[in-house]
Image 1 (cartoon, rainbow, N blue to C red):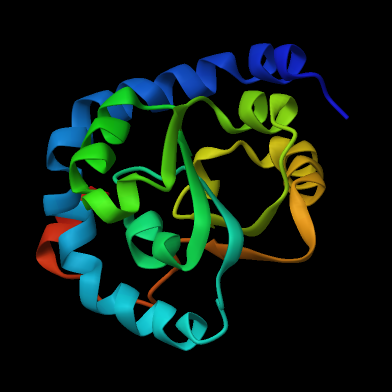
Image 2: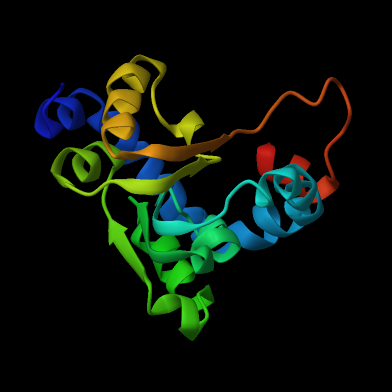
Length: 178
């Protein structure tokens, strides 16, 4: 198990670049990234919605502007959203309705530092649209840490952008991807 400091130093330049990217894009992120994908995301997550029964606790790694917290947070007694971008967390904070905000904690941290220092276990760990920000050689340590924080019967929800097989994405998504 890698210590947080070693891991963070090893990939520091990678994550610093990512933080800078999210600082610049946070204000427009939902408009160009989230909103054009709302229908696709509803279709993607609808079959899962029935399987995510809720429970004690939810952890959303790379919570960004709070999409998964908005989707599933109310099903859990407490929810934690973790993101390394203060700008994205500010947007998430604004978006969470008061009823949900009371059970949600938003934490500014990278995944490794949070998982390395956190002692809690979660009924659901969501990592949606953010694994592509983790260097491939960090997957081993990342998934070992995630596993250590899942309840015995907990669920891990992963979703990533995929190749569309040549079909063109909506224009705003294509602009964002460019």
